[in-house]
Image (cartoon, rainbow, N blue to C red; front, side):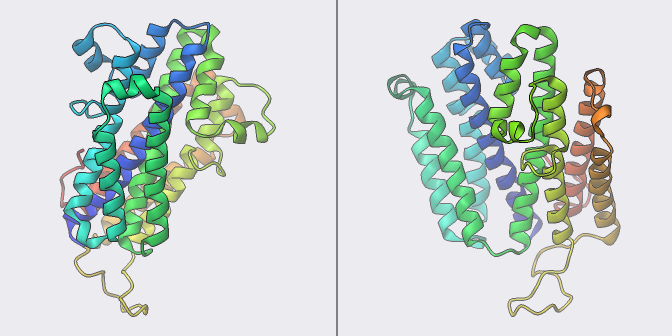
Length: 333
């Protein structure tokens, strides 16, 4: 596996996860328009702000209206943060390395991309956005379900999953920052936005099964930061990333299945120094998360906590890119 292949695998993992996260988030935010505490235009603005596309949208359209917002955030080809753009870029990476992965993955993602590309604004208005949200979530879930069923557990799989896990941790931190800022400004709407975040992460039921009775910023942050049994928590995702990075740093098994001590053909196992630094960084982040005891996650400390772990995740992403993709160029996508 060459640097180019490793880079493409990493970004397929990140971009498909990002597309699913955005589709989940926008689906839940769309239903917030039914909340009597929020005006519809504010909900549409919050939807755009949730994925960082509000400024670009406002420059193009001016006011926030339902059909334009939904189309722009889901399907606008010129907006890098739209769900469609994430899927398109993941497809481009997969096309570049399609001969190195099971053909079934290319056929599935390419067909999914073409079906979404064909959707027009009139189709959204006619069928209702909920159906499109569902199609997007189901299509992306099908991709990952197929990958999990047909891919060898080799370095290609570990790189794909490393990208996915880091994207998941990064997304959770970013959404915690966004929701905490919203709650600080609009206390009366805090419950709705906190529940929206839990639902977007698929964690509302798991949250209450922990015996947590109140929906507060502190409790939601604690759950999404350090709950080590919930797949979309920062701690769970970073632990998964560390495991995949550790597997990536080991010599690959040859085709016969017995270890020969040699790297996978073409896959540049990085220097021990780079690997050690990368693993040490991942383990330090995990350890710091483990030290966040219940009493240490308080509302007045959340901004500092989110900022610190957000920066840690970005440094980990850059170190992984430098270690596996090039000899000094940080990642970009």
